Length: 171
Length: 104
Image (cartoon, rainbow over all chains, first blue to last red; front, side):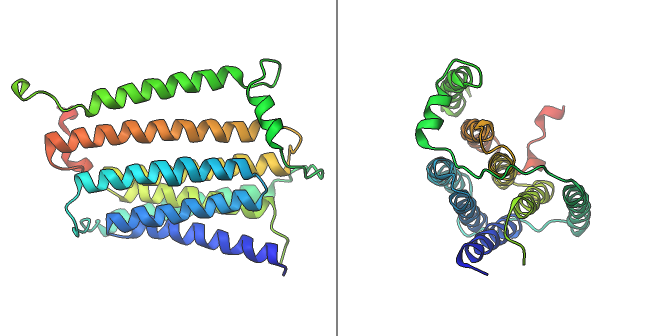
């Protein structure tokens, strides 16, 4: 077992245990912190796969953006130190059963399938990514890139409109 | 023990996906449900990257799909949190059991 394998298994364990704790803990702030570490573990797996650009995007957008947003909204909507109410055991058992069956089915399908591997393990370079993203030729992603920018603008305006405090006289 | 490869990453991503589904089914608080959705989206991203690396390393389609999913997830989280905060203002609660006005 060499260093690379050990790092991979450590990252996998970090991701899965933190994910599991994040959906099972009863303190919502801790759930957010466990989610943070799970996302960092996934970013580590991207680094391990040598997709450094995606790993950087993952850290910037998820860890630096979405988790901070979630923590802010927890502070705005939750009383400090209050635990989430206990769930009904029946719902927990049936959810766990459904999830376990789905997972087993998926893994059986995956292990039965023979993938045709491409042995040329090259990783994308930064200039490759940039040229592909903004090219208008075949295989280029210029149109989705522009559509995404419009979507982000629309989402931003929508958020401002939704979260705007309405005037007291409309009450 | 095998060299970690595509099957290991598919195992991680399937496990993470179903962890997210479990959280989505059991939680009744809107913010924790949103966190479960983030886990599900991340498992999908991991799948795209793994397939791109091991099956089509010459192309970049998986990488771009991941990038766009991350961008859409950011927009989705922002809109969802705006709605949650507005709901908290009018109902003083973000439990889905209390947010059933639309049913009537």
